[in-house]
Image 1 (cartoon, rainbow, N blue to C red):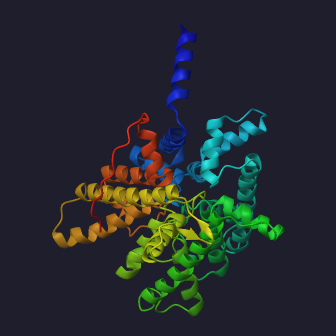
Image 2 (image 1 turned 180 degrees about the vertical axis):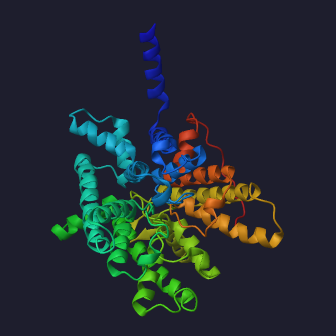
Amino acid sequence: MPRRVITYFRTFLLRHLTPPRTFVLSFAGVIFIGGFLLWLPFSATKDHLTLVDALFSSASAVCVTGLVVIDIGKDLSLAGQIITMMLFQCGGLGIITFSVFFFHLMGRSVSFKGREIVQSTFLHTPRKDFQIILKSVLLSTLIIESFGTVLLFFRFSQDFSPGQAFYHSIYNAISAFNNCGYSLFSDNLIQYQSDVIVNITIMGLIVLGGIGFIVQHEVMSKMRNTRNRLSLHTKIVLATTGILVVGGAVLFYLFEKNNIIRDASWQSKVLISLFQSITPRTAGFNTVDIGQLTNDTILLLMTLMFIGASPGSTGGGIKTTSTALLFFVLWNRLKGQEEVSVFNRTIPRETITRAISIIFASAFSIALITSIVLLAGPKTNPSESRYLFVEYLFDTISAFGTVGLTMGITPKLSDLQKILIMIMMFVGRVGPLTLAFSLSIQASKKSIVYAEENIMVG
């Protein structure tokens, strides 16, 4: 009887655990495990966290978001802080990635499902050198995070003892590369807003983590051998990232030159503008008080957070490639062209449809969650509600983009609102379409094709 039951469950799991469901469940499982560990008394310095706060902190770490309802450096013990560091490292690379790698080290074969999940996570097209790419992902992660730790240690050793300096360095380096934004400093990185080493190191780690591992791999291969070709994906990611970083920095400076950076030195103005242009693209670190920014800058940050990082990276958002494809679609339509061509290559229509679907599903998710968060908030007069709406919208987009920036409302959220923001973080990390596919029932193929009929649009 037990053998029959085991066989039944095995068959049931193989039939119903599709790659999207496995991917989604792996993140959900780690979030609940992390939440339970953070809820235990040894993870807190004084009173243990409430269950909602523990789950929120775990979800924020696993989804590499960085939104906080507690002070990581003060409210969590050393054990709790190490747990969060492990959570955002697993969340950044994906628990399936580590599982597949350890199976490979033990000499065990990798299942087709595991291979498909990891390839869809890091690669734009399946490749035969899958194992080499996987090793490259983990090796490059170790090298980049170690290099960032060394640079930060060189600076933090001037402010802390060697042990504390190393701990702050490795925590912030891993957090930055995984685009999480968790920091042990109560003011995040505001105290280092004019420090060249800290700013350059953190920005470099954020960008490297945000462009995607396949882009890192192809760029390194190109540097070793100039005859190697960069894929269309890599070209679009690098071009879009460069435009967003430079354009965002210029706009931030123009919007804030008479406000928050008015009295700063030229060096500080450049560093602050660049940092605030890079960090909304899913990182969550900040060197200024976000709540003091102008309305123009808030809109700019929300736009950058919605776009997010690149596919196959540690970040969220609709991704740079989807944004670029939307622009290319509009541009080609204005020129009267049906096909979308970029860098002498034609983009498949299926890819265009998927990008537009992602953008629509993401915008709809943000609108829905923001509305519910607003309804679940305190009842105030219209003027206060309007200001709360901006803060709630900002936090919701920040959660979806797995960014972690906030105008200061996050710690004041009710338990219901925190749960809603958790859902938004989860959707942003796994992707709205992936989540939808994991919940959907596989439809049978229809043999009937109906006649076409046109409708008016636009």
